[in-house]
Image (cartoon, rainbow, N blue to C red):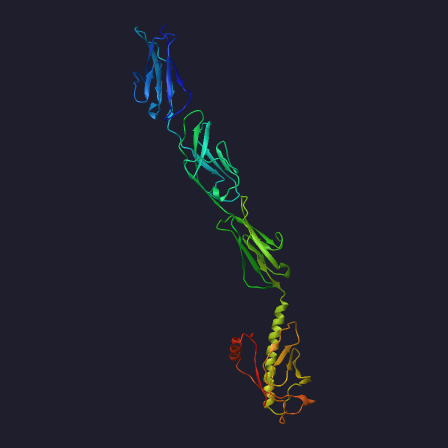
Length: 422
């Protein structure tokens, strides 16, 4: 009976990719004088030799496969010098695919990385498992090499502690083991790596110092990302007892124990990222009794002004009580104007100083007094024990004029009066 031709293919892999070489081999029993005819798709039409397609003995070779070479192939043998044709072989189907494009993904998916974070690039080419992957960064012709903190494992390129030098564009491609097949390169992915940002700390309201019982809010911020949570520090780790809401740390009734240095830092939710700590802000909290002392000093000034006005009326109206008693102490003269204010005169023609004797403040109240003589006025009633009394006319100058003149001299704002003796 007529023998059946046997058809085989070398190499045996499926599918073929464009550009690969494949060879079909036909055989009929052991006789050596068979010639072979090849068929593709249409059984009645033999395959002819063309560029890249040639027949040599029992082989039909395709040197650079194209998608047009895809299809079913058969063969048969014909004995030379005899009208004998074998039965056709069983068919073999060749599948030829265009070179696939590698697919590049990044895990995790965020594009903005901070120094120290871990990122993994993953490359894939269709469903075949025997691809090896090559990685490229910025320069297409230069593959990425494995270095400390950078390693290739299977289809992944891992960066275990990102640095700013890792920023750039990445590509990958697949290469089939044992075959001269390289995939098309993937689309690029750009990694952006930034240094850890510094938190910014502000305080509302801005005044210094705070007084006990006041409300103050510290606000922390880190760049434009919205998923930061904030941690607060005061001299030591986070302090309990106050309200933390989002980016704000509120002290609703300040106490002296709230005084100190404050810092904050941001932590990204779902990521092992902590910002640099903010610069510190120092809160100073004072007891509100200091304000009472200040008010007391102001009250003393008002009282002194009223006393001066009384002195003027006393001088102009006979029969009214005379000036307070002035007591001599060596070369100076001293008088008590009020429970909180005492006036001390140096020798005639020099400055008199008003000292505030009551209250915790040690700051003196000043008034310039010119004393030209120590003559007793006959038209003013003599006071008890009034041998050492100095009677004076008091003339109040415009306060604004005095303020301007003394501000030019660099003095603090005080209330001035001129004392002229008659």
